[in-house]
Length: 194
Image (tube, rainbow, N blue to C red; front, top):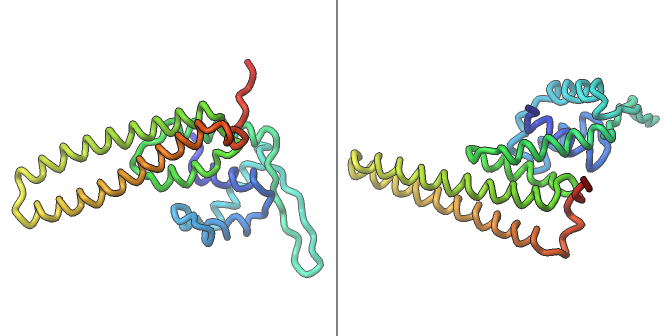
């Protein structure tokens, strides 16, 4: 399965052709904290592999003040590959890293159908609800054998996690309302006619 880093590279190129250095700049400076530890050689290796697979095409850009740079654009096959893999990745996402989920959902515009978007959002809601139930059981087990300081610590942690889970669920519910509003239909990939 494709990685979130690879999805991000394709997602960024699908929005705007860019060269490797600019991709690295996005990782480092544009709110993609989950990916900012990615090293430049890794990005260039992904670009080289995707170009060989004909998912992207690189063309040299010449500027009299700078050395030539290879600017990458996504191909038709690359767009299809990206859309299929983004959908698959998000549909099978586990709640263990919600930041990564929120990072990747930003690429849903024109890449995921409304029906698939709603399915992805509802799957994530169920993941969170299940996660909260499991964590509640674990917390109760820990507290039953804990000292008072440990109990207080677990209660603080539980409260913090509860706040995060509620914020995630609210955002997911807001996205459901967004998707169900017919005024937002142009945001989504049109369903393919069978």
